[in-house]
Length: 53
Image 1: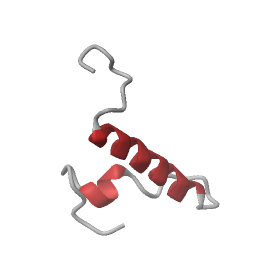
Image 2: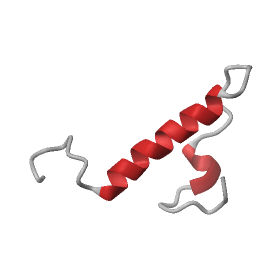
Image 3: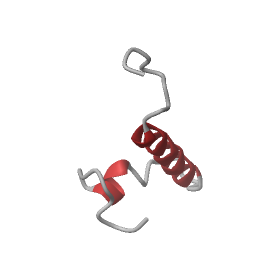
């Protein structure tokens, strides 16, 4: 795993990819095409969400 940067053995990496897809899907649901939700919306700079989605 050390040399393989593309490996998904790290649980946090899989979770981060899932969250990126979640944010993209939420923003795609708005008709105006603008970005309404970002990582900051829930995480506020922390590793765990400080607000509920």
